[in-house]
Image (cartoon, rainbow, N blue to C red; front, side, top):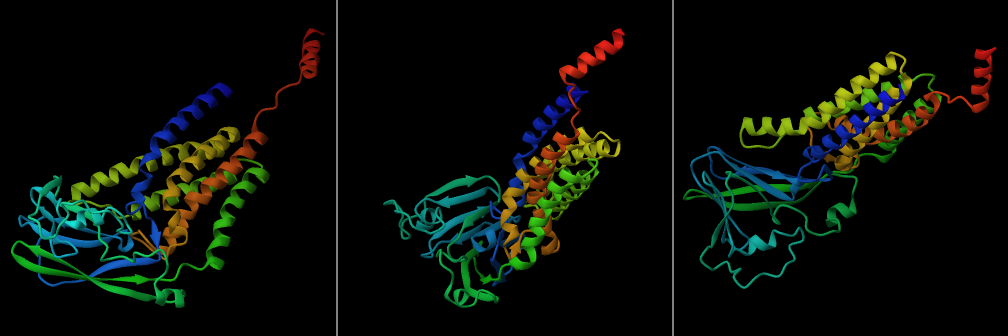
Length: 355
């Protein structure tokens, strides 16, 4: 029996490690939540087949060009910076924006060739007609809060409005937008919920007569992982791109749900030790998948296609549910493991057989 359990545990560990990689798909370039938010307000001229949106909560712009017309993005001195068209993305190596955009704070030493008056030196950086770049016109660059936010962090603010010039073929286009601030979620409301989840997991393993209480938290946390996956918008120019992105992001959730099903069935069947071990391993998987989304816990704005409150609760079940399952499973495994007969018990049993 113990050999079979060890074999199952080893297999699940391998699956957990294999499935933990794509967790970052739930974030926007590594950022899961923020009190800042950027958005496009108006585009001065129609650009059929082209979409422009703010990503990273205001830090970057993303342009998807599904048309046959090349879109030119201009840099900070109105020089040609990017060309995004059917043959991919070309970046001007002589544009100062090429180097300034490499750092979030924009502080960098420009090479001698970086001159907005120089003839563009186009270098291809992508074969796809889509590109995301860090644009300093759309985000707050200082590490300190904007003055109006620092004066009143509990209110909504428009930090500033911005403009980015483009060209759609030969037509001049101006993209206008804004950066806003929203107050963070209430600590008094949310942190008791966050802390209650790991305590519930620990108590389930410490006081539960069987592994079924652990299985209940296991089911809830796995359900949160599935919801989080389905509610997270996938990036991509086409439906096929988005489907492929969803498929890649689904692999950890598929593994997690499969192992959860085995663990719940073991708990229902009275195989408490196996259920406890699987609960701990799934808890590890949940924690690994949830940590990239930790900003969701205290960010006013999160990446989700559903209600923000449910997204925040789902992230809490991933992170704190994972911690609770590991803590509860550690205690439960010690409680449910078979007792090893002592040497005196073995001697008494041997004498009883020979009597």
